[in-house]
Amino acid sequence: MHFLCRCGNRIYDTTDYISYKAYILSDQDCFDYTDEIERYVADKALDADACMNHIMHIDVEYMWRKIYQCSQCGRIFIEDKSGGLHSFAPEGTEDKRLLRSVKAEDWRGFLHGEWDEVRECWSEHQGYLSADTNDEKFPGWQDFDSWKDLEREYYALFEKLRQAGRIRSASLKRGREWVHKWSIDEENNIKSF
Ligand SMILES: [Zn+2]
Image 1: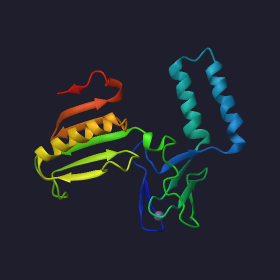
Image 2: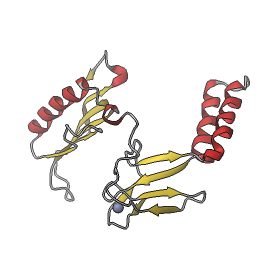
Image 3: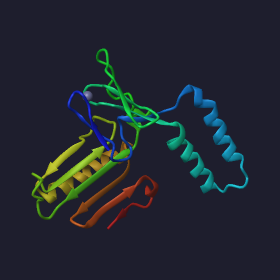
């Protein structure tokens, strides 16, 4: 889903790990929420998967509501129980990244590169590199018109981001072929193929 902010910025909610989205829980629900978790955890009839399913259900469906912040103007949007959005404008120059991870720059994001053998008609370039992190020292998006340049920059950036602890996964795709895949879980067994 996506919606338009009054400032003209379109706000998208179509992926996971969104830096301008969070969940809120009413203070009136806090103890009921932890009580429900305790009840499921203590239920010996539930295995670990069933327990997790119940907990995720109360998290997402029952009590948590979504909140978004426009990264252009800082407006806050809070979802009501019916899914409607209520917006609140900032009074001054408030932080426009209030909803990002509590880990700030230390949050581990993603690096992804992609190259099309034939330039798509809707695209001005054949390839791109996208680094989704909270650390502004690193470039976020780069376009490429040469596979060699894209490949070189991918591996250079990958090493820097990995050593700085800024990514949890990375992947490079050429056409339909995965050229490189890595994740933090495979840190000691890097897959290159
Ligand atoms: Zn806005």
